[in-house]
Image 1 (cartoon, rainbow, N blue to C red):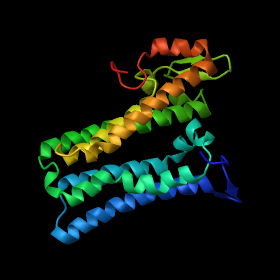
Image 2: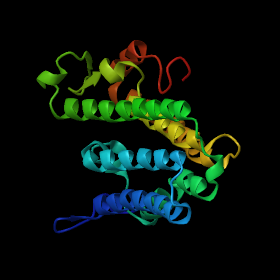
Image 3: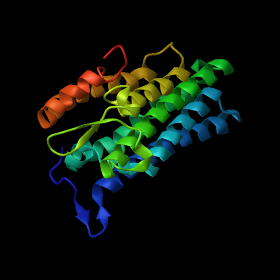
Length: 245
């Protein structure tokens, strides 16, 4: 997508600014729904508050640790053009906030049971830990495989001189960062209840996107790493979801 991979104007990184703008706009749209509900009803439904909290945590952690995202092959190899700008400035704030919009428009549909909400909170926390933990592990190992904090990890050497982590987060499934993203996507939709399909658009979209990416990544990694990748797939048999895929 796009023509130039990493256009810059002096120290101004266009791709970075567009990405940050989209993430922050998403969070702002969520908080606008929260403020609008409070203004109209003088209270905020717990389900909406929880969804806005989830989205805010995700945005803050992603922007704070954006080096995880910027170091991925997807980000490095994707040009900046109409489609990528549209995705960041339209998809992020207006599609990813669908759950918050739904709960603002239909507050009675949201979960109210505190135990159910607590269970959803725990589910999101599990996804966030997977997402941040696996990305941190990969990023730090890529920078310095001999980092003392990573000495407990097992890895497989490749012919190119690199090593593939096969324990820790990367010993659970071959894409634990994607799994964390997927768990959070489900947790963001559950507070909306089960009466309507619209709040589940994002997890359905995400699972289709991730499965497509995983299949493409598997082919690319097999071509790049050869026998080392075969050993990794034997050590870690599941691509995305344990015992399923």
